[in-house]
Length: 274
Image (tube, rainbow, N blue to C red; front, side, top):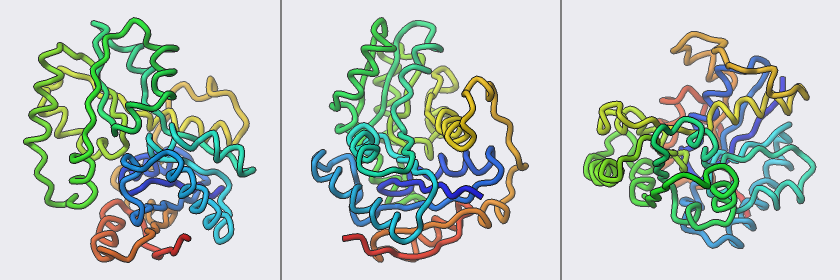
């Protein structure tokens, strides 16, 4: 069994872990929510790189996973290349799905929701230049929305935030929206209800799962044109048997235990990263 470590500042990357578990046999997962350093999106790049290096060193010393997934767009655009140069293990990054959005947008008008750090990073600008030079892009930073998802998941009222975002994209006749922060996937159904199905949402879950398969098997991505679920939904006990959940701060411990259970993961420990 291969062990895959997923890293995010909070709960945003959980859907990426779940997607991998449902589509890849023979893996176990660990989810590290760096709650002591949440949110990554407001951290200075140098400080974020230092923190992620410390976190990966801790994980390496205690758990030694086979593959790391940075299940956070901000962490990926800021620190992915540094971590690849610093550690011998494979690192897979989660970057905004600009290329898929460019492929499916009919009117060439695309929106992107992300942290301000991701929207300002040169990595995103390079993605846009390479894959979306002909697109009209509208960018929206939604830090307050991310914090609401993280800290009040079970009772969050985001209608005010979503109404404003939906109106901005509708006014600009956007037909495709890139979910450029993993937290937004938790609002997928709500977002679709606001847009009444008129806007397509794009994220990187399938791309990340395909990349994990490629790294494990050394096979071409062309060998996996479509991913098929290996288990019916819901099969919470089967997921929990293969998934462990960690946080880096004891603050709101019971809340995060409930989060882990809600997403079919076994809460394991609070780790002390220094």
